[in-house]
Image (cartoon, rainbow, N blue to C red):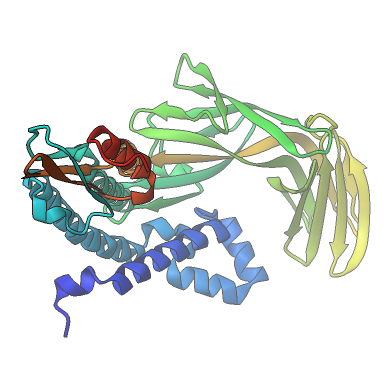
Length: 419
Protein backbone atom coordinates (compact mmCIF):
# COMPACT_ATOMS: atom_id res chain seq x y z
CA UNK A 1 0.00 0.00 0.00
CA UNK A 2 1.36 3.41 -1.01
CA UNK A 3 2.02 5.99 1.68
CA UNK A 4 0.06 9.28 1.37
CA UNK A 5 3.23 11.06 0.22
CA UNK A 6 3.99 8.52 -2.52
CA UNK A 7 0.33 8.50 -3.56
CA UNK A 8 0.22 12.28 -3.90
CA UNK A 9 3.42 12.42 -5.97
CA UNK A 10 2.41 9.47 -8.16
CA UNK A 11 2.23 10.42 -11.86
CA UNK A 12 -1.19 8.79 -12.10
CA UNK A 13 -2.52 10.93 -9.27
CA UNK A 14 -1.10 14.10 -10.79
CA UNK A 15 -2.53 13.29 -14.24
CA UNK A 16 -5.94 12.56 -12.69
CA UNK A 17 -5.85 15.88 -10.87
CA UNK A 18 -5.01 17.74 -14.07
CA UNK A 19 -7.79 15.98 -16.00
CA UNK A 20 -10.38 16.78 -13.31
CA UNK A 21 -9.26 20.42 -13.16
CA UNK A 22 -9.56 20.64 -16.95
CA UNK A 23 -13.08 19.18 -16.77
CA UNK A 24 -14.00 21.75 -14.11
CA UNK A 25 -12.72 24.52 -16.38
CA UNK A 26 -14.72 23.06 -19.28
CA UNK A 27 -17.85 23.00 -17.12
CA UNK A 28 -17.33 26.67 -16.21
CA UNK A 29 -17.36 27.60 -19.90
CA UNK A 30 -20.19 25.26 -20.95
CA UNK A 31 -22.58 26.36 -18.17
CA UNK A 32 -23.50 30.01 -17.56
CA UNK A 33 -21.77 31.12 -14.38
CA UNK A 34 -23.55 33.38 -11.87
CA UNK A 35 -26.97 33.15 -13.56
CA UNK A 36 -29.88 35.22 -12.33
CA UNK A 37 -32.91 33.48 -10.76
CA UNK A 38 -34.82 34.06 -13.99
CA UNK A 39 -32.09 32.35 -16.02
CA UNK A 40 -32.02 29.44 -13.60
CA UNK A 41 -35.80 29.12 -13.81
CA UNK A 42 -35.67 29.15 -17.62
CA UNK A 43 -33.11 26.34 -17.61
CA UNK A 44 -35.29 24.31 -15.23
CA UNK A 45 -38.28 24.69 -17.55
CA UNK A 46 -36.46 23.97 -20.82
CA UNK A 47 -33.94 21.33 -19.65
CA UNK A 48 -35.08 19.83 -16.33
CA UNK A 49 -32.53 16.99 -16.26
CA UNK A 50 -29.62 19.30 -17.05
CA UNK A 51 -30.88 21.79 -14.46
CA UNK A 52 -30.95 19.04 -11.82
CA UNK A 53 -27.34 18.07 -12.62
CA UNK A 54 -26.25 21.71 -12.55
CA UNK A 55 -27.94 22.22 -9.19
CA UNK A 56 -26.53 18.99 -7.69
CA UNK A 57 -22.91 19.69 -8.71
CA UNK A 58 -23.05 23.46 -8.49
CA UNK A 59 -21.96 23.78 -12.11
CA UNK A 60 -23.40 27.31 -12.36
CA UNK A 61 -20.94 28.46 -9.68
CA UNK A 62 -18.06 26.02 -10.17
CA UNK A 63 -15.47 28.22 -8.48
CA UNK A 64 -17.42 28.38 -5.21
CA UNK A 65 -18.00 24.64 -4.74
CA UNK A 66 -16.54 22.43 -2.03
CA UNK A 67 -15.61 19.67 -4.47
CA UNK A 68 -13.44 22.00 -6.59
CA UNK A 69 -11.84 23.43 -3.44
CA UNK A 70 -10.92 19.89 -2.33
CA UNK A 71 -9.58 19.08 -5.79
CA UNK A 72 -7.44 22.24 -5.90
CA UNK A 73 -6.17 21.55 -2.37
CA UNK A 74 -5.25 17.99 -3.41
CA UNK A 75 -3.39 19.31 -6.46
CA UNK A 76 -1.65 21.84 -4.22
CA UNK A 77 -0.52 19.05 -1.88
CA UNK A 78 0.92 17.06 -4.80
CA UNK A 79 2.64 20.14 -6.16
CA UNK A 80 4.06 21.00 -2.73
CA UNK A 81 5.67 17.58 -2.41
CA UNK A 82 7.19 17.83 -5.88
CA UNK A 83 8.33 21.38 -5.18
CA UNK A 84 10.10 20.48 -1.94
CA UNK A 85 11.97 17.71 -3.72
CA UNK A 86 12.95 20.06 -6.55
CA UNK A 87 14.35 22.72 -4.21
CA UNK A 88 16.30 20.10 -2.29
CA UNK A 89 17.69 18.84 -5.55
CA UNK A 90 18.58 22.41 -6.58
CA UNK A 91 20.48 22.99 -3.33
CA UNK A 92 22.31 19.69 -3.73
CA UNK A 93 23.26 20.23 -7.38
CA UNK A 94 24.19 23.88 -6.83
CA UNK A 95 26.80 22.91 -4.25
CA UNK A 96 28.10 19.89 -6.16
CA UNK A 97 31.24 20.45 -8.24
CA UNK A 98 31.93 18.32 -11.32
CA UNK A 99 34.47 15.52 -11.01
CA UNK A 100 36.27 13.47 -13.63
CA UNK A 101 34.00 10.53 -12.85
CA UNK A 102 30.90 12.60 -13.56
CA UNK A 103 31.89 12.91 -17.25
CA UNK A 104 32.03 9.19 -17.98
CA UNK A 105 28.53 9.28 -19.48
CA UNK A 106 28.78 12.75 -21.04
CA UNK A 107 27.02 12.89 -24.43
CA UNK A 108 29.94 14.78 -26.03
CA UNK A 109 33.38 13.21 -25.56
CA UNK A 110 36.62 13.15 -27.53
CA UNK A 111 40.15 11.94 -26.81
CA UNK A 112 43.33 12.80 -28.73
CA UNK A 113 47.09 13.30 -28.44
CA UNK A 114 48.82 16.64 -28.73
CA UNK A 115 52.33 17.99 -28.11
CA UNK A 116 52.84 18.75 -24.45
CA UNK A 117 51.72 22.20 -23.39
CA UNK A 118 52.12 21.82 -19.67
CA UNK A 119 48.41 22.54 -19.18
CA UNK A 120 46.51 21.21 -16.19
CA UNK A 121 43.20 19.41 -16.01
CA UNK A 122 40.30 21.85 -16.01
CA UNK A 123 36.77 21.19 -14.76
CA UNK A 124 34.13 23.90 -14.85
CA UNK A 125 30.38 24.43 -14.55
CA UNK A 126 28.57 27.34 -16.21
CA UNK A 127 25.05 28.77 -16.15
CA UNK A 128 24.04 27.01 -12.98
CA UNK A 129 21.19 29.51 -12.60
CA UNK A 130 19.36 27.43 -15.20
CA UNK A 131 18.87 24.75 -12.54
CA UNK A 132 16.40 27.09 -10.81
CA UNK A 133 14.05 27.11 -13.81
CA UNK A 134 11.94 24.10 -12.90
CA UNK A 135 11.66 24.92 -9.16
CA UNK A 136 10.66 28.50 -9.97
CA UNK A 137 8.10 27.30 -12.52
CA UNK A 138 6.49 24.93 -10.03
CA UNK A 139 6.65 27.57 -7.28
CA UNK A 140 4.70 29.89 -9.56
CA UNK A 141 2.10 27.19 -10.15
CA UNK A 142 1.76 26.67 -6.40
CA UNK A 143 1.29 30.42 -5.81
CA UNK A 144 -1.42 30.45 -8.49
CA UNK A 145 -3.11 27.47 -6.83
CA UNK A 146 -2.98 29.16 -3.43
CA UNK A 147 -4.43 32.32 -4.97
CA UNK A 148 -7.20 30.19 -6.45
CA UNK A 149 -7.96 28.67 -3.05
CA UNK A 150 -8.08 32.18 -1.58
CA UNK A 151 -10.46 33.22 -4.37
CA UNK A 152 -12.72 30.24 -3.70
CA UNK A 153 -12.80 30.94 0.04
CA UNK A 154 -13.09 34.73 0.13
CA UNK A 155 -14.06 35.87 -3.38
CA UNK A 156 -17.55 37.08 -4.30
CA UNK A 157 -19.32 37.47 -7.64
CA UNK A 158 -22.61 39.32 -8.00
CA UNK A 159 -24.76 40.05 -11.02
CA UNK A 160 -27.58 42.46 -11.78
CA UNK A 161 -29.54 43.55 -14.84
CA UNK A 162 -29.99 47.34 -14.92
CA UNK A 163 -32.02 49.34 -17.41
CA UNK A 164 -31.12 52.90 -18.34
CA UNK A 165 -32.06 55.24 -15.53
CA UNK A 166 -32.09 52.51 -12.87
CA UNK A 167 -29.90 52.78 -9.76
CA UNK A 168 -28.04 49.93 -8.13
CA UNK A 169 -28.25 50.69 -4.43
CA UNK A 170 -25.26 49.95 -2.14
CA UNK A 171 -26.97 46.95 -0.53
CA UNK A 172 -26.30 43.23 -1.02
CA UNK A 173 -30.01 42.71 -1.77
CA UNK A 174 -29.80 45.07 -4.74
CA UNK A 175 -28.06 42.41 -6.82
CA UNK A 176 -30.09 39.83 -8.65
CA UNK A 177 -27.84 37.05 -7.38
CA UNK A 178 -24.58 36.59 -5.51
CA UNK A 179 -22.11 33.71 -5.42
CA UNK A 180 -19.91 33.94 -2.38
CA UNK A 181 -16.78 32.07 -1.47
CA UNK A 182 -17.16 29.56 1.29
CA UNK A 183 -15.96 32.07 3.92
CA UNK A 184 -16.85 35.34 2.19
CA UNK A 185 -19.22 38.06 3.35
CA UNK A 186 -21.90 39.47 1.00
CA UNK A 187 -20.82 42.02 -1.58
CA UNK A 188 -22.19 45.54 -1.39
CA UNK A 189 -20.78 48.39 -3.46
CA UNK A 190 -19.81 51.43 -1.43
CA UNK A 191 -21.76 53.91 -3.59
CA UNK A 192 -24.98 53.94 -5.62
CA UNK A 193 -24.45 53.21 -9.31
CA UNK A 194 -26.86 54.62 -11.89
CA UNK A 195 -26.85 53.31 -15.46
CA UNK A 196 -27.38 56.52 -17.40
CA UNK A 197 -26.82 55.32 -20.95
CA UNK A 198 -25.75 52.18 -22.79
CA UNK A 199 -23.83 52.76 -26.02
CA UNK A 200 -23.55 49.67 -28.24
CA UNK A 201 -21.79 49.74 -31.59
CA UNK A 202 -22.16 47.08 -34.26
CA UNK A 203 -20.46 45.90 -37.40
CA UNK A 204 -22.41 46.02 -40.69
CA UNK A 205 -23.14 42.31 -40.18
CA UNK A 206 -24.97 43.15 -36.97
CA UNK A 207 -22.41 41.58 -34.65
CA UNK A 208 -21.48 43.54 -31.56
CA UNK A 209 -18.34 45.63 -32.11
CA UNK A 210 -18.16 47.52 -28.81
CA UNK A 211 -20.25 48.20 -25.77
CA UNK A 212 -19.87 51.08 -23.34
CA UNK A 213 -21.99 52.40 -20.50
CA UNK A 214 -22.11 55.81 -18.88
CA UNK A 215 -22.67 55.36 -15.18
CA UNK A 216 -22.99 57.83 -12.32
CA UNK A 217 -21.30 57.01 -9.02
CA UNK A 218 -21.98 58.54 -5.65
CA UNK A 219 -24.59 60.44 -3.77
CA UNK A 220 -25.42 64.18 -3.84
CA UNK A 221 -22.76 65.11 -6.39
CA UNK A 222 -22.37 62.00 -8.53
CA UNK A 223 -19.46 61.69 -10.89
CA UNK A 224 -19.89 60.14 -14.29
CA UNK A 225 -17.63 57.33 -15.46
CA UNK A 226 -17.41 55.22 -18.60
CA UNK A 227 -17.67 51.48 -18.08
CA UNK A 228 -16.70 49.18 -20.95
CA UNK A 229 -16.27 45.46 -21.48
CA UNK A 230 -12.50 45.64 -21.14
CA UNK A 231 -12.43 48.64 -18.82
CA UNK A 232 -13.92 47.82 -15.40
CA UNK A 233 -14.25 50.28 -12.55
CA UNK A 234 -12.48 49.84 -9.21
CA UNK A 235 -14.72 50.72 -6.29
CA UNK A 236 -12.58 50.21 -3.20
CA UNK A 237 -11.97 46.48 -2.75
CA UNK A 238 -14.62 45.67 -5.37
CA UNK A 239 -14.56 45.84 -9.14
CA UNK A 240 -17.51 46.48 -11.45
CA UNK A 241 -17.59 44.92 -14.93
CA UNK A 242 -19.82 45.42 -17.94
CA UNK A 243 -20.82 42.16 -19.59
CA UNK A 244 -21.38 41.89 -23.32
CA UNK A 245 -24.88 40.65 -22.59
CA UNK A 246 -27.48 43.36 -23.01
CA UNK A 247 -30.93 43.87 -24.45
CA UNK A 248 -34.00 46.03 -24.77
CA UNK A 249 -36.20 46.87 -21.78
CA UNK A 250 -39.87 47.39 -22.63
CA UNK A 251 -41.89 49.40 -20.05
CA UNK A 252 -45.41 47.99 -20.22
CA UNK A 253 -48.74 48.88 -18.63
CA UNK A 254 -51.05 45.87 -18.73
CA UNK A 255 -54.81 46.06 -18.01
CA UNK A 256 -56.22 42.56 -17.72
CA UNK A 257 -59.04 40.99 -15.72
CA UNK A 258 -59.79 44.21 -13.88
CA UNK A 259 -56.22 44.80 -12.70
CA UNK A 260 -53.57 47.20 -13.97
CA UNK A 261 -49.90 46.31 -13.63
CA UNK A 262 -46.77 48.13 -14.66
CA UNK A 263 -43.65 46.13 -15.33
CA UNK A 264 -40.42 46.08 -17.28
CA UNK A 265 -39.95 43.22 -19.73
CA UNK A 266 -36.30 42.40 -20.45
CA UNK A 267 -35.83 41.38 -24.07
CA UNK A 268 -32.72 39.27 -24.56
CA UNK A 269 -30.58 39.19 -27.69
CA UNK A 270 -31.80 36.41 -29.98
CA UNK A 271 -29.66 37.34 -32.99
CA UNK A 272 -27.70 40.25 -34.43
CA UNK A 273 -29.76 43.36 -33.55
CA UNK A 274 -32.76 41.13 -32.66
CA UNK A 275 -34.22 41.07 -29.13
CA UNK A 276 -37.02 38.81 -27.91
CA UNK A 277 -38.91 37.90 -24.74
CA UNK A 278 -41.93 35.81 -23.79
CA UNK A 279 -44.19 36.19 -20.76
CA UNK A 280 -47.01 34.12 -19.31
CA UNK A 281 -49.64 36.15 -17.47
CA UNK A 282 -52.30 34.99 -15.01
CA UNK A 283 -55.34 33.62 -16.79
CA UNK A 284 -53.32 31.99 -19.56
CA UNK A 285 -52.41 35.21 -21.35
CA UNK A 286 -49.08 34.98 -23.16
CA UNK A 287 -47.10 37.95 -24.45
CA UNK A 288 -44.43 37.64 -27.12
CA UNK A 289 -42.25 40.68 -27.65
CA UNK A 290 -39.70 41.45 -30.32
CA UNK A 291 -37.62 44.55 -31.03
CA UNK A 292 -34.94 45.34 -33.57
CA UNK A 293 -32.01 47.72 -33.10
CA UNK A 294 -30.97 50.22 -35.74
CA UNK A 295 -28.25 49.47 -38.35
CA UNK A 296 -25.50 50.97 -36.17
CA UNK A 297 -26.82 49.47 -32.97
CA UNK A 298 -29.22 52.31 -32.14
CA UNK A 299 -31.89 51.68 -29.52
CA UNK A 300 -35.08 50.07 -30.96
CA UNK A 301 -37.76 52.62 -31.81
CA UNK A 302 -40.72 50.22 -31.79
CA UNK A 303 -41.88 46.95 -30.28
CA UNK A 304 -43.60 44.08 -32.05
CA UNK A 305 -46.18 42.65 -29.65
CA UNK A 306 -48.19 39.44 -30.04
CA UNK A 307 -50.80 38.41 -27.47
CA UNK A 308 -51.88 34.78 -27.33
CA UNK A 309 -54.49 32.89 -25.34
CA UNK A 310 -53.21 29.35 -25.18
CA UNK A 311 -52.02 28.78 -28.75
CA UNK A 312 -54.50 31.18 -30.37
CA UNK A 313 -53.40 34.65 -31.47
CA UNK A 314 -55.65 37.21 -29.79
CA UNK A 315 -54.08 40.43 -30.96
CA UNK A 316 -50.89 41.85 -32.42
CA UNK A 317 -49.39 45.18 -33.36
CA UNK A 318 -46.17 47.12 -33.73
CA UNK A 319 -46.09 49.78 -31.04
CA UNK A 320 -44.14 52.93 -30.44
CA UNK A 321 -43.80 54.43 -26.95
CA UNK A 322 -47.18 55.82 -25.87
CA UNK A 323 -49.19 53.48 -28.13
CA UNK A 324 -51.38 50.62 -26.91
CA UNK A 325 -53.00 47.41 -28.10
CA UNK A 326 -56.60 46.58 -27.26
CA UNK A 327 -57.27 43.01 -26.16
CA UNK A 328 -60.41 41.04 -27.07
CA UNK A 329 -62.85 40.81 -24.20
CA UNK A 330 -61.48 43.89 -22.49
CA UNK A 331 -58.00 44.79 -21.55
CA UNK A 332 -55.15 46.73 -22.99
CA UNK A 333 -51.34 46.65 -23.24
CA UNK A 334 -49.61 50.03 -23.48
CA UNK A 335 -45.94 50.52 -24.33
CA UNK A 336 -44.64 53.35 -22.17
CA UNK A 337 -40.96 53.36 -23.09
CA UNK A 338 -38.09 51.43 -24.68
CA UNK A 339 -34.63 51.53 -23.13
CA UNK A 340 -31.46 49.49 -23.10
CA UNK A 341 -30.61 47.15 -20.25
CA UNK A 342 -27.18 45.74 -19.44
CA UNK A 343 -25.78 42.96 -17.31
CA UNK A 344 -23.33 44.26 -14.70
CA UNK A 345 -21.06 41.97 -12.74
CA UNK A 346 -19.36 42.95 -9.50
CA UNK A 347 -16.50 41.01 -7.98
CA UNK A 348 -14.38 41.11 -4.86
CA UNK A 349 -11.14 39.24 -5.46
CA UNK A 350 -8.09 39.88 -3.31
CA UNK A 351 -6.20 37.05 -4.99
CA UNK A 352 -5.58 38.91 -8.26
CA UNK A 353 -2.10 40.22 -7.48
CA UNK A 354 -0.90 36.96 -5.87
CA UNK A 355 -2.11 35.17 -8.99
CA UNK A 356 -0.20 37.62 -11.21
CA UNK A 357 2.90 37.06 -9.07
CA UNK A 358 2.49 33.32 -9.51
CA UNK A 359 2.17 33.65 -13.28
CA UNK A 360 5.29 35.86 -13.32
CA UNK A 361 7.26 33.26 -11.34
CA UNK A 362 6.06 30.47 -13.61
CA UNK A 363 6.97 32.49 -16.72
CA UNK A 364 10.41 33.33 -15.31
CA UNK A 365 10.98 29.68 -14.48
CA UNK A 366 9.95 28.60 -17.98
CA UNK A 367 12.32 31.15 -19.52
CA UNK A 368 15.18 29.86 -17.36
CA UNK A 369 14.38 26.26 -18.25
CA UNK A 370 14.45 26.81 -21.99
CA UNK A 371 16.98 29.61 -22.43
CA UNK A 372 19.61 29.03 -19.72
CA UNK A 373 21.10 25.55 -19.60
CA UNK A 374 23.70 24.48 -17.09
CA UNK A 375 26.75 23.05 -18.88
CA UNK A 376 29.65 21.14 -17.31
CA UNK A 377 32.89 21.01 -19.28
CA UNK A 378 36.04 19.00 -18.68
CA UNK A 379 39.50 19.11 -20.22
CA UNK A 380 41.44 16.21 -18.65
CA UNK A 381 45.18 16.21 -19.42
CA UNK A 382 47.60 13.30 -18.80
CA UNK A 383 51.35 13.59 -19.66
CA UNK A 384 52.83 10.86 -21.85
CA UNK A 385 56.45 11.86 -22.47
CA UNK A 386 56.59 14.62 -25.02
CA UNK A 387 52.86 14.30 -25.61
CA UNK A 388 49.67 14.85 -23.68
CA UNK A 389 46.60 12.67 -23.83
CA UNK A 390 43.63 15.00 -23.68
CA UNK A 391 40.03 14.01 -22.95
CA UNK A 392 37.46 16.71 -23.69
CA UNK A 393 33.89 16.27 -22.47
CA UNK A 394 30.78 18.44 -22.44
CA UNK A 395 27.69 17.59 -20.40
CA UNK A 396 24.67 19.89 -20.85
CA UNK A 397 21.77 19.58 -18.42
CA UNK A 398 19.37 19.24 -21.38
CA UNK A 399 19.14 19.78 -25.16
CA UNK A 400 22.44 17.95 -25.79
CA UNK A 401 22.31 18.10 -29.62
CA UNK A 402 22.24 21.91 -29.49
CA UNK A 403 25.72 21.96 -27.94
CA UNK A 404 27.50 19.95 -30.63
CA UNK A 405 29.04 23.06 -32.23
CA UNK A 406 30.27 24.33 -28.87
CA UNK A 407 31.87 20.97 -28.16
CA UNK A 408 33.68 20.89 -31.53
CA UNK A 409 34.93 24.42 -30.94
CA UNK A 410 36.28 23.41 -27.53
CA UNK A 411 38.06 20.42 -29.08
CA UNK A 412 39.72 22.62 -31.69
CA UNK A 413 40.80 25.12 -29.04
CA UNK A 414 42.54 22.29 -27.16
CA UNK A 415 44.40 21.14 -30.27
CA UNK A 416 42.15 18.28 -31.24
CA UNK A 417 40.98 17.25 -34.72
CA UNK A 418 38.92 19.85 -36.60
CA UNK A 419 36.08 17.43 -37.33
